[in-house]
Image (cartoon, rainbow, N blue to C red; front, top):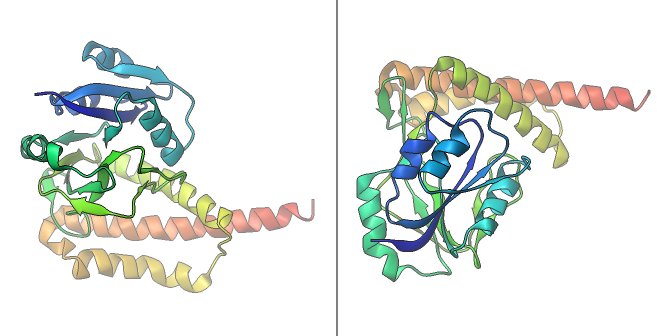
Length: 255
């Protein structure tokens, strides 16, 4: 059964993930991929699976996803990342509920991540609700270059999950933390934020305590401990970069 929903994905070098992702939504009557210059077989695989593929320069996460939704032929959009797939239970739930959906409501989907050999169920990683199913005439992505989200006044939750294959290994996790921390630092300063010694000294430890103890990350074994430490380190390098960029900006005033 096909539904008038466009499955929409933005991609860059996702040949290892894209097939699994696209095959997980047999009910979507359109698959739209907006690529930003992949050097691998991402676009070839997507086209072979029936996707409409566009290639445009990278704008940042929010603007790129907004553009992808604009290119879709359907007003109902299901936004998904290439390293995710729609579970069979979620697919059945979408098919069952579609005729009852309200176009003025956006729908949040729980997301369950697989990392270091196990599904992560604590530490703030689950249920990790994501707004992914929406009517584009009423809702759209904001313009944030990182931690983008669909702006919606009214939201409801689905019960079943998107499955997220979050990092291939520890190295990719570290590389991602480094990249995201830089974007977060730049965004903080662009929004008028300042460097804070107090936050630099206290936020990393409070993030570890939050993830590992308050949000029960210890129940996920080694993975839960590593996630909590990594979250704390990500906060630490974000504030370090805020300090660095602030100092660099100040020094330019005297050039």
